[in-house]
Length: 536
Ligand code: SRM
Ligand code: SF4
Image (cartoon, rainbow, N blue to C red; front, side, top):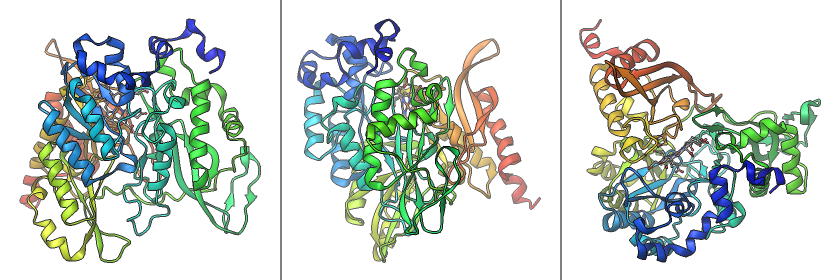
């Protein structure tokens, strides 16, 4: 770390406690924590450092912790899913689980006493929750159809795993990368529809070809350079995308292209530059983009090259993101003849132990023992033969996890909200479901509409990527403070992705339904059911 970065006087309280004791150090103390219980624990260990192991103290449910796993590329085996269900059933007091907006799973209701056993169970099936919270690299997202998609350009599975292994030391914990200035998000996509929202990650790799008949953009604004005639697959690199309460930015080009075999080296180099030079004085100004702003892109790029010990090639002239984003709900043929993947809609990503067992059973009986998760908080079961589709589609679970949900239900995403999150300004998941059900009863739709709810300006529910984004806030109504939302619109995903912006502030949740109804009619072609029925 540079002197500037470590200057004691300028350290915020998080930097101070990290300097005193690395977050990962609590890994060696789990047995002791389990024996003394959460009330007797040092508060900084309990409330903060445990997050380095993916264990989150919940002030809303004290004594019942949340555990955030890592699911590289959003892929989990049926065996692992069963273990998560068993952990929830056996140790999760009132336990439920959530599929997250980073293709991941969180378990709830976990007691500190059970952690040693739970970690053993995880290790036995190759699951890890290491470095999944606080100032670490979060779950690395990849194409949910990797290896299945007829049109994919690159199968991201192995690469995402390699990056996770390098950052977490194969899930054991890697002190090299446990003291970043802030959280860090990485996404790698190999398909054509930007299925991972590359633009909202600190570091993202999007498919792009070099050479062939294409020209590449000259580095740093120089004249275009003709590349070799051989067409090479690789990734253009985007950096600095993030959401926070203070500022939201889409990622910007690093003007660099890498071959797949250099992706791990780029990730490590970017992280080292960020770790050693990122701004640490003010936590609200510590994400990677703030460093890029301070340095300028050229200096940042040069620092990455210096760490890598080699020059980066300039970006390919265009990337290959040329499709609208798919939601994967429904039945689709795979590139393997005779096999299909089926996307199940999981309302607001909420799972209970029985659901997890049932999903695992379906994936085992009909598929290949593999389950995938999407950033829309849904599930994909791959490798189902044509001959088994009929019986699969008659399974009772599909009544709840539908392959053809109604329009608003289909595009609904919600963060955790007030039920478990102490940052929340409003309850989200239940309200989100109730609101869209009421709207679906009133309106008919002819086009998809993606509605994202997020309980506070931290934006975990990504309202800025939605057609309609709802961000929790407090508003005054009849002289009282009540739960309300700010409304975002204009988010575009897939090809030409860009962020939406706030169009209306401070709508009380109780008054929201008519406001949404009008937006849906005016902007998304929805029509009142009554009107449709009388043929108006
Ligand atoms: Fe998040 C903090 C939940 C995705 C931006 N986020 C939190 C905490 C840990 C706060 C807390 O301690 O209570 C929430 C835990 C609540 C709980 O009990 O579940 C929380 N974030 C989530 C999840 C579970 C939302 C969901 O329902 O899916 C997502 C977990 C992803 C994962 O598997 O790792 C989640 N959070 C995101 C995303 C979306 C993304 O990554 O695409 C964002 C915006 C993108 C970004 O980070 O740039 C996001 N979460 C934040 C922030 C604002 C970060 C900042 O730079 O200021 C916070 C607050 C913080 O870190 O101080 C936060
Ligand atoms: Fe909690 Fe706010 Fe994130 Fe929702 S957006 S999970 S309320 S921190």
